[in-house]
Image (tube, rainbow, N blue to C red; front, side, top):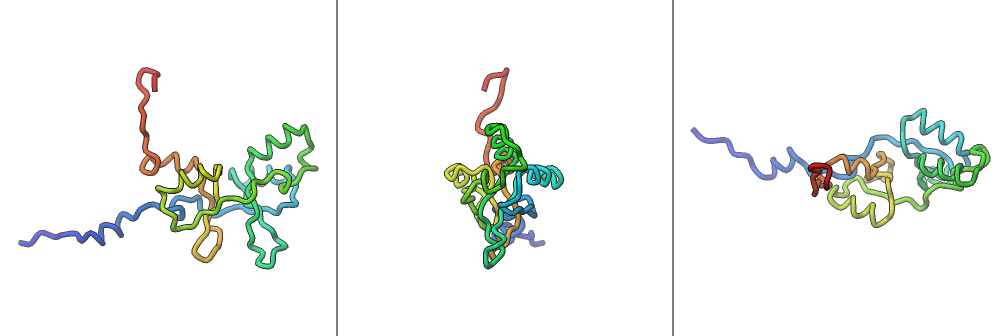
Length: 158
């Protein structure tokens, strides 16, 4: 009786390497740069998300990403300025230009790519340039197969 064998190519298909597209949080919430921070904060809360993709809705393609904003930028901008969140706009605090990731980017390079760019998150774009979702450093840290744990905690000492 012959033993079944598995071809290497089939094994690669069965267990593909993770990519930005396979790791990102699908779907993204977009916002216009002229929206006030109070509205942006409500949108973050209502959509249960941490990041908003800022779009230039006046661009000819109407799909031009010009920045990214998180609750961190909103909170520190309002508190630091002692300002009114209704009088400060997304354009005033957004991170621009954002780092873009391609859906096929290999997961192993993502942590260093994001670190070098100083990005805590990045929009992931499909081959057609459409927004697939957002990938955060937090998402990557949750995956020990991408960022291995190099130390252990024993008796409270690392």
